[in-house]
Amino acid sequence: MANASGLISPSIQCIRRGNLSSRGIPLSRFCTVENFTRRVIRCRAVMGAEDLALGASPLRPPHPVLSGKGCKLVGCGSALPKILISNDDLAQIVDTSDEWISVRTGIRSRRILSEDETLTGLSVDASRKALEMAQVDPNDVDLILLCTSTPDDLFGSGPQIQKELGCKKNPLSFDIRAACSGFLLGLMTAGFYIRAGGFQNVLVIGADVLSRYVDWKDRGTCILFGDAAGAVVLQACDSEEDALLGFDVHSDGDGLRHLNAPIKDDHEENALRSNGAPVLPQSPSSYSCLQMNGKEVFRFAVRCVPQSIEVSLERAGLTCSNIDWLLLHQANQRIIDAVATRLDIPPEQVISNLSSYGNTSAVSIPLALDEAVRSGKVKAGNIVATAGFGAGLTWGSAIVKWG
Ligand code: ACO
Image 1 (cartoon, rainbow, N blue to C red):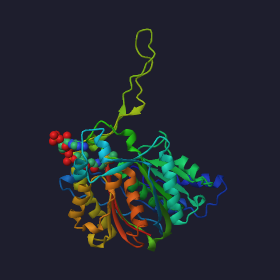
Image 2: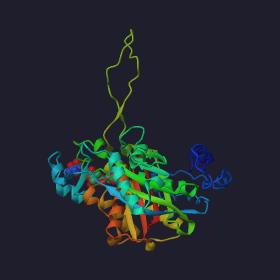
Image 3: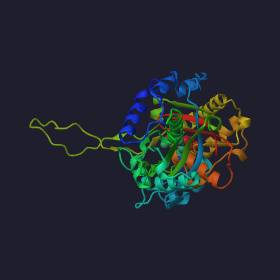
Image 4: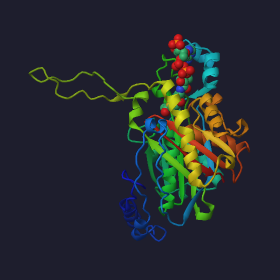
């Protein structure tokens, strides 16, 4: 893993080696500290969305110097909640219409979690399908990354997925929170764990239930989002087969004002001291509904996503003409079309399932990939340019090979 300064930290792997050793698992397949220190990623300068908008050239972090390992995408799966909400259904709740929503966004319906479903349950369903396609036994998974901004538990839901999948060897599992870029960052993180040594089968799950944080009275946002889960299995392989060909990732805290769901001031009863002052400070315990300046997020996406894909392509030594499929975070059809036009990628090479599911945040990329793979659209060896963008702000892209 790269730490905040961009340097690989040997301590993480050292701890893991210690844990494995104490659990009686042989260490031979894990890298040595000596190997680890050789794999150094140099620092990269931080550039915000605004800098990039002004035409500044993103500084190119050099590729990590890596071990001989590669990683490949060998399975995918997805799961949808039962309740389907059409645009006409929403028109009964807020002042909107099927025409407005479909023309402005491309969305026609979305799925919403019912009371007897959970994010963990959807994630487990999606993961089982991905593991089945990959022909990987749950006991052979050694890392589970749950990419979500809406876990069932504040402290994370990754370990619950590990438990419900019945992974008897206790793989490391934890959550990654990066909104609509979550899956892309999870995929990169999985690649680093595999390449940095030791991890063989990594399950990367995108799961989100934004319906929990949508203001159902705000027609500007409630029409956009849907719930779901999607998963992929990333597997260690020889470097010649490596499927993560190039990537580019960014974040910019200045953009928080455009898209956020801050912690909420709950004015609960508080015990008072004899002088009338409250014993405890106010302690907010829940989050506000999602707030978004749609126009600013739209501008940010059409500006930063094509730039990022161009950088990833350059790092992969490829050009747009090498791309078989463009698979963007499914936020708005107009964003997808604008990015495809800018990159000169024809509509028949653009994957979109937004009309059925809306913006499913960290799920949209694995969900669309799963549909495209299972329908036979994306075939083994195809090159997919993918990009995520959203709250944070965070954004990035990756050029990957399927299968
Ligand atoms: N139905 C009818 N009218 C509406 C609706 C609606 N659902 N929503 C807004 N309007 C009205 C507005 O009130 C406004 O009316 P006015 O002109 O009388 O003031 C008019 O339509 C235009 O509103 P805009 O907000 O300017 O509409 P816009 O064309 O920008 O579309 C949208 C809004 C769809 C939200 C668009 O800006 C968008 O998709 N932005 C990107 C969102 C995104 O990509 N998010 C991704 C990240 S999400 C995450 O990370 C969690």
